[in-house]
Length: 249
Ligand code: PEP
Image 1 (cartoon, helix red, strand yellow):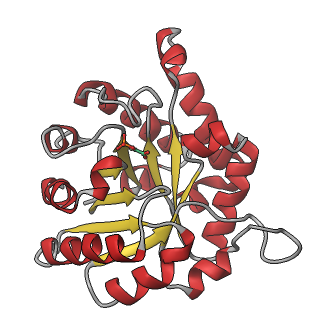
Image 2 (cartoon, rainbow, N blue to C red):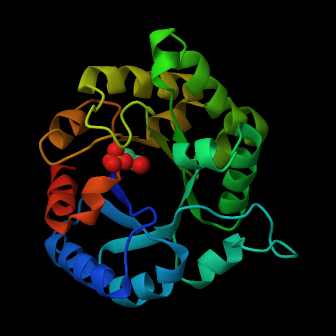
């Protein structure tokens, strides 16, 4: 039985005061949730704050990116070991905003993915097609290619140490979520492709959905057989909404 997971991606939002209010309310709201996992991925400067507020609670914390290198002359980069130092368990890798705005490619995302698993961090590996790609019926080609960038290169054992996130770009940051059926179709495709390499890993890996999740649509999406939770952007900045999504999981 796969444990459900809800991850908040705060993106470049927050301040020490706002984070405290947000995280304290989330921690309080999910105190009695023991059957699913709740994670917040915060901007780097707030990792220490997340660690001090969330330690010994049932909220885990993580980062939104990492370097694929361990150390060296890489101005502005943050290594896997640094995230481990701050108690991170999770790290988002290959988010569409990084693929689009920061020239992340399948190769660079895959290298970060591998660096994370090597450091015993759980990468949340994002995949998804654009609106144009969906309209051209390329969804499986694009998502399959992104999945293969880690599956063929590092193998199913490495992939089993991750969480996969299907985030169609046309649904991220819009008010146009995938329908449960649309998301299920792609989640099932991802699971079957992994099953082609290893059936047990395919059965156990968590595949979460992201893109305009909110308290009203979360349950219907999470009720789908291959959807194991959510990656939440905007609603993760609203403690009450985020807690409702965690409860739906
Ligand atoms: C995201 O950016 O990962 C995301 C899912 O954003 P939103 O929930 O705002 O669509």
